[in-house]
Length: 302
Picture: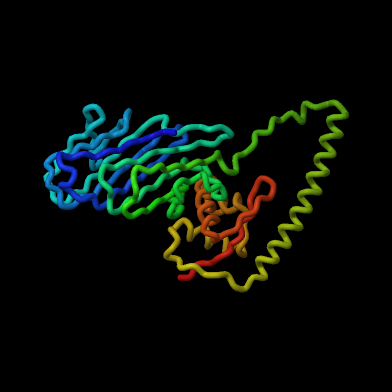
């Protein structure tokens, strides 16, 4: 388990109120962490605030300006009663691979004073996915899951949180990853191998024909629906609205790859938004071969 302690000390711990702490974490495919923290304090009477950062933190910035630390400690002059401090930094090798193309990010958060409100979010790398059926993949239970149109974001919103507390997210590799198929076919000359290939092709055609029948029946079922539960459009972000409208244009059903082509979006962006809509039960997704069929289950109301 990787443990990160972010500590805040002052000459007098009772000389301020910690109204809000907002932390945004973004994980990269190389295992790097980019973190941005915003502190809102009231009734501050301290002249100096000491922030102790995690070991090996670099590219440290205060309000967007680069700054240096002494033994991982920032000594900030706080000539304010009501203060807002924005801090950002980076850490390397913070994500642990636990095998089978699965990574885990785990941290222990500590603050010397309990904030009235804690808002914490973790954005996993673009194209990665979280199995929401496994309760051990997100600890503690998240408030909600969202997306910025690129990656999946796990969010916690807590009032008077009981700290220290462990926060953990486990995620796996690329969805819709394409297999690389060596082109050996033209080099095969033995009769037995050619027969095997011919049989495989026949079986593939039969499977494809059967799949097409299933697709047709499902499309008819979707078309027969005359009423879909409506959700207020204000609950969706702009990219989610575009996805929902595009599915509606295709009679409430579309293939995920075709959706990406029509919108000219990357696979990872489409995958992230679809995963979030599926979690919200707005759409239903079924895997057919190496592709997904997407069905609209609920509609937007203006």
